[in-house]
Amino acid sequence: MRRHSASRTVDAASFPNRNGLSLLEIIISVAIFMASLAAIMEGLQIGRRSELSARLQSEAVLRCETVMGEILSGVKEASSAQGNPFDDDETGNWEWTAEVTEAGTVGLLQVTVLVEHRPGGEEPNAAFTLVRFMRDPQLFLDAALQESE
Image (spheres, rainbow, N blue to C red):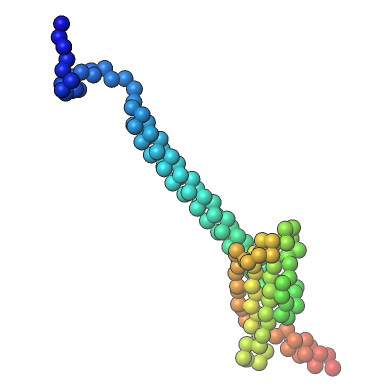
């Protein structure tokens, strides 16, 4: 009978059929998996926030162009107004402001429209400003009155 000495070194040949994984290997693989999952989730969250921001910004542009078109066509009066809600906004988060000033030339007005999305009355998280010039509609009314006299 052979006796094994305590000073003998263990080599790879003494464990020829190693089955399974060690605890250290499992812990390392789980840590790598969790870090990858956290990075993927953060990327998805950033994508969701970007999508919401782009959607709100696009809607602000469309709403601003609508208000400007209504002012230029005469549907809305060409006068300054602040904090006006939109009729089609069920949540009440969208509001528009118009500023009409003299443009420095007789008969020309500068129209500035600002549309903001204010969820719950907080700071706006989407806004768009549009500036256009238009002829003063009062000049046309005055000219028509003079011709009728």
